[in-house]
Image (cartoon, rainbow over all chains, first blue to last red; front, side, top):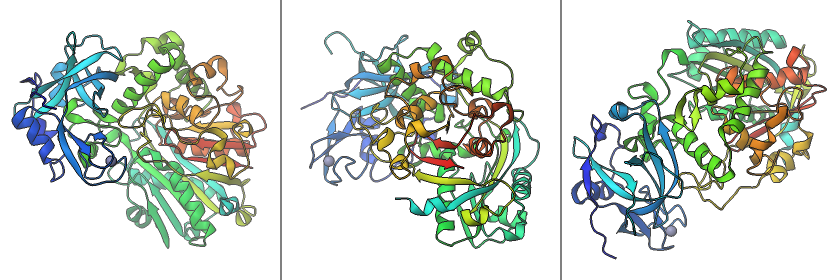
Length: 151
Length: 392
Ligand SMILES: [Zn+2]
């Protein structure tokens, strides 16, 4: 299934995403470079048990198989849980506080954390879609906004 | 069958107390706690031949530094990762070491000075790096998403839990209120102002849905616990407190550290649940049931963890704990007194060591105004799945 690249907007906070990222490894490079360069959110699809997964890991946590392919996430999902930070722990988010972070169950199955953008009153179960944000150092980070009608 | 565990007892306990700002080093705190614990059981430092340390550097001090600085010569030592959740593991390792003859007198030592560090998980502090290790932190920290600090994962689990089971803030507040009422009877507790529901509900959100009064109070403290074989403990000054049985910390794809199995937080299954209640090893191996426990002590870095521990260990059914704790049921004269020292929420965040010495004091009958009537069994249990049952 062909999936279009997602819209990339500018992260409104201050600072470099690379200061907050886990170091990139051979296992994770494809995931991050697809985000930064193509605006695509990739998921690993296990060749053995046919389940999608994220975050990127070299071994399937469901069945232990090592073989997988990359698939592009449709970008839609439902809000599974969320929190609102009333105190900043991380300096890049200080100017955005209070800000919300969601746990989103993607259409493909895995759950992913992302900042909630333009959702003043999050409701568990609401439909959301991926909105990627490019930070000042060029790193692209997945976030989520409210889905439009029909998504 | 944890047959070996029936042969080990707590012989002595000591603490440097709980202070927002102690003004003394982690080593000095450890020395105070160790001195009190050895006095409590009539031992000299020369008798100690085993040392287990929880919370090493930088918040505390590592086992080798402590042995050198405190003048201990040990032939058995161990140390766990500098996280709160290893209290039970440390005690379990002591029991195993004693049962297998690795040592005769093991000191379990936790010392840490939080007042010199910033809020846990904040940019720029020494423990910040763990939030970006192995693709994310141990409490689901995902920093580029803004999900930071242990409270982030706990709040995410709490929001889902409250949604699924229809728990409102007022019901959650019963946990903080009960533990504060207990702390009013504990001269060592740092939070000793009476607390009512209106005050709780006015408490500001830190990471919504968790409020400041749902969060433990960071303190400086040290606790020392001396364990030995039960036959030796019976000849020592204080009444021995026996380790009746235990089960270890759980981890794996169906476990998220700050939420109950089956809730589905992070990548955890929303279906699979681990064995619960009386089916768990700690009950099977001791032949006890939740109804046999006189007082429960649990890890309460955040107030919902008390609810999840009650459910995980079968004190009430899944999803019913918020109703179950209403009406004083978990208070000192209630059906199941919980965290009678005030716990992390009110005594101060001791990573479970304050509760451990409280268990010993309750079973010795030394708890004064907060003494649980005819206390024969006491349990340590956590959201993380580990547990210890103590008895006298
Ligand atoms: Zn698989």
